[in-house]
Length: 321
Image 1 (spheres, rainbow, N blue to C red):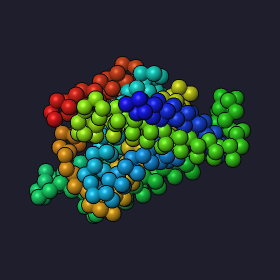
Image 2 (cartoon, one colour):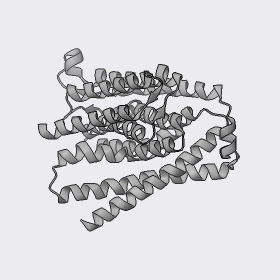
Image 3 (tube, rainbow, N blue to C red):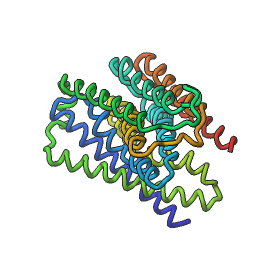
Image 4 (cartoon, rainbow, N blue to C red):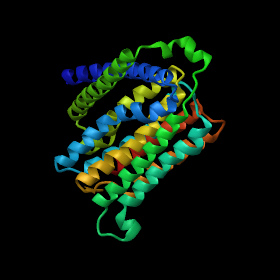
């Protein structure tokens, strides 16, 4: 038990340190090459913080438990939308750009709707089983290609740093230092996240929690810990665009890339997940969108509502076991 507690503490420290370095390096990269911070959040930061989900989902598929891949992604996306945005807003109210409200968040909601339509074969087309087939995987990979093309089109538009950015000195950081910060940040996030999940899982088992409860809470929350730390640190440093870009980008990476790739390698049965889980996933995105549209800010009370919805959902799942 004490070893598990030590692992959790060390993992949490690594995640926080990694989030700080990744944010600093990513912001400096955006300013150096005049790339919008939202684009960096949608790509480099989102990909780096989504690596734990990718590893867990891919290994689950290869180890003969592919159903865990879908559960991990759905749980992680719910955590991203409700807890990460909610907790970040509770700590520091988040400003949302008009482009994010009109394009990026709707794209994230569309990804959740597409996943629900592809996964619920029995409900949608009267199939015998709910499964993400190889064909579904190819469809999601095509969506991922469209998303990347859209993101690169944003990058080509560029963005001119304002006087505040220059005063902070982010654009003067050397390229090798930027690369070092990004690489070390991602490595610390992944390693720290794994240590935290291992330690927290050991503590939970020691306290007699069931495997189902561990999977519903610690697995999804643990693999999303890098996104949580990165979003809070980015929001604290006033980089709201990167914080939101990280959440949206991670959700899109999780659905279109991770599930698309894993389903193409090995068909993924949607066992253990119900229509309610997918409906909650879509509704969480719509609630996020609704709050973002109000004055283009997510304030503390809205963050409290988002976090409260996640707590209520987890409580329902635990009681239903």
